Length: 601
Image (cartoon, rainbow, N blue to C red; front, side):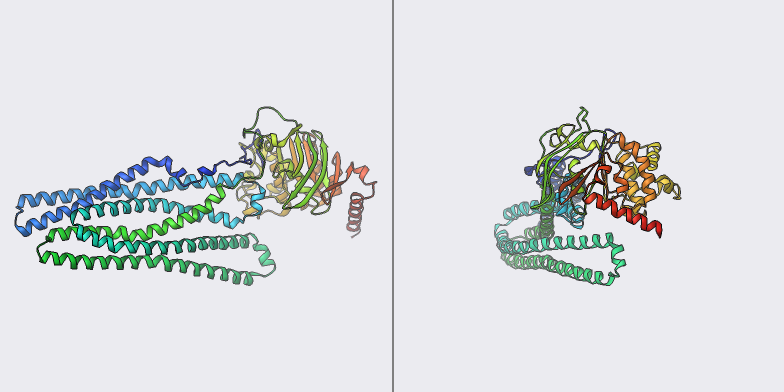
């Protein structure tokens, strides 16, 4: 589960930001690609410049033909120039599409890598308050929206801006009267346009949040499908999904109503502008104040502006979606871990740390509730500490403090006489093999899961670890043995097989500190005895914390502590504790009675 000298390097995080707040701007991902952005700008200038020059050539041809001042060689020259410039414009327009789209995929790759890396560095406190479905939506949908807003937004945004600016300048130089007519028409259009965009931003945020709700609902339903079927709740769950899905469609439709209203609005305004230009320009042609070629040139500019103006609504809508998604991604990148870091070096240190573990006046409170209080322990290197107590007494939290899955509220946890907050997480967790109470297996081969924490596990190591956990006989019964593919969370294995795979994974790393958190609860007593018989030599070579409710397991420990209501109420060896009145002796009597009843049955 954690890395060691042999193991995979563990991503570490302390109470500081790996990505500083001032760096959590989208520009952080665009600046490294400034050459591509510059190339896009150059392509835009060339393509737009040519497209603005072509109507001027058309004007020369029309006026020359009308006034009969254009001979055949001059006409051929103008037409050839028109054709060649059109070809050049097509080539640069091709690059104009290719470069930004390629850039957007590079940004997507970097951003998704940063978000995933940052999520793996956050501590348990963060994940207690977040939903898996929401995180999946941010990792997939939101990052895809950001990618599209950069690729298409950069492409259409730069081109639209260039067209509007340079076309306006050329129109003003061509005919100021017609130009001011167009400008006066488009100014109120811009105001209405941005009012609609403000409304769309709110709708987009509501939509993205609801997409996360649907994603989280589906994730929980699929993960708990056995429970749903066991209680025959499929119809109720389907009805709940129908309600969620219906609300999603309604919010999407509201957004689409706002978004799609921009296109007819822009088209209507453009048509109105064309009518006014033809009316005003036609009158001036009749009076001889304006040539037909100039009016045609002006209309060509307006036609050339048509797509950028229509695309402006689509581009701004996409940028608004990207802005909402970026805010959701930035919330992850700016989230800090609650783990305190007292050193700057996050890499494993070369100095060897002794496996002695000490708890000094340790208290632990989560969200105002006290779970552990006045814990004082001194566990010598190479000894085994058994931990037991009622459900919810704080046993798992106690061993989690050693691996720094959380920090104590008060007091200190020491390893090798060093406060673990003064050790890098990579070095500390590199010493630990952790088999959790609820084993998490990955949808890979059994061999991959056993050797998960080792860089280059060989078959000998995998076989040894499986044998220690009494898993080898089960594996040899599988058709593909160690190459057997496990389902999600190891669903293809039984509960006992999952726990034994977790034990194998922990000991395969040959850690200095071995933590086994109630890992034999799903196996029968005979299998338990076989596992403990093979674990004994392994446990004697390292410091072991063993959480269990079974006396038959705890009796192997050098020392046993009983935790009740977050406090240590009893401590001693097995023989000492069974003679003392209290939880341990009562548990021993109860389990002996159960064994007797089972034998009689």
